[in-house]
Image (cartoon, rainbow, N blue to C red; front, side, top):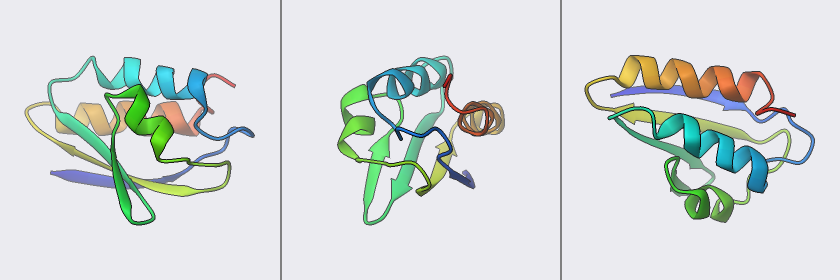
Length: 87
């Protein structure tokens, strides 16, 4: 299991389009990919789970990846968030 904390930089937080991009990226990996925000855990492979976390701009989340390709998965989702999730 590998973990990394990142701050959401895009101005609108994890709304539908960035949530979809995060899910699309996450689905490319076999590992489970979740993130923790406040007291909840969201499945990064589920758009509804990501949207349900209600993550806003400036919030810090912690990705947790576990599985065969966990290192690559973590690097990919962290880079996606750091690049602004397409916004």
